[in-house]
Image (cartoon, rainbow, N blue to C red; front, side, top):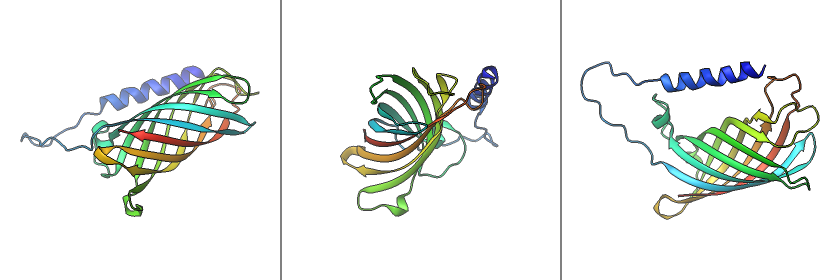
Length: 193
């Protein structure tokens, strides 16, 4: 089962790197204009609510790209691709850790902006390693699908404050016979520069 999951990830990586933009004519192609790459840091705190209460504190590094800069096909102007690296601890007395890498699509909802606050939605998946397991979980390395809603508050020079609420899931996607997942709700506060 684990081999099937790793084979799927390898196949997905090959497909993503094999996509090449093609021009129908031999005329010069203008370089596309992308939104600037942004970097950020964030703190996340929350609680795993199923199957048991596990407090979580996470530090996160972020890179935010124009979606078309990574995937060479037409996309809405307000669509971004966010890459994250996370390191965290449990806050329930166990002092256990986690490490995760994630990729999320983030879409700004500029039509609903309030003053300097722009709402956004995001969703994606990653891989997460926890040095703890709940009963029936099976593996320490798991998939990490998540979705959230948030706001970005514009500051000067392209910098911004962000806040979001995320629902976070952890499971091995049935790559192992035991697949008890962990579900969490997290509050995120971040800074983009």
